[in-house]
Every structure is written in structure tokens, then in C-alpha cells.
Length: 83
Image (cartoon, rainbow, N blue to C red; front, side, top):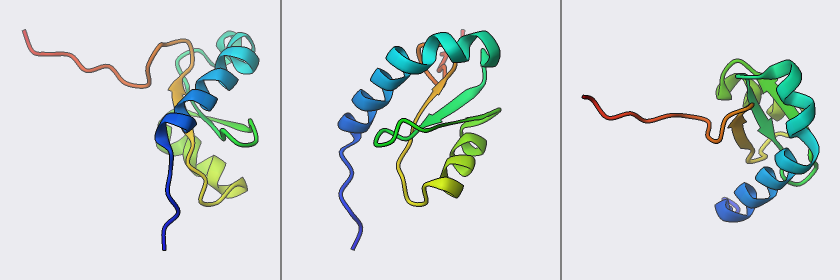
């Protein structure tokens, strides 16, 4: 049986960790890269893509649901409408 995941709690914890502990440190060196944050431990993993960052994270924390964000941006992805 799969364990239930509280997405809102993951996002809230992940955003707090990024804002309070990681933002200043990561933006200087990894601007534009993707970061996957373990909301339970605060461990984080950097990659060029979300998939790369999460794969790195799952090597250390298998089965974890990560919060992902693009370093230095308000969101991981942008959606644009055609003109």
C-alpha cells in the first residue's frame, strides 16, 4: 500500500528551507540550476534538470518526495501562451 503524501506540507516545508537556509548560498553559485529539497532532512541536490536533481536525491533518500525549484526563480517552470 502506498503511503499518503501531503503535497501542501511538502511545498510549505521545501519553500521555507529554500528561503531560510539555501537561497543566498545557492543563488551565487547555482543560479538557473534545479534543486531538489528533502523537506524532512533539509538535504538538497543540484542538477541541470529536475530529473537529474531528484535522481541524485533518491540515491541518498529512496522513496522521498522532494520539493523542486529553479535556483533564483519563483517557479521551476514557466508556461507561456502563444501570441
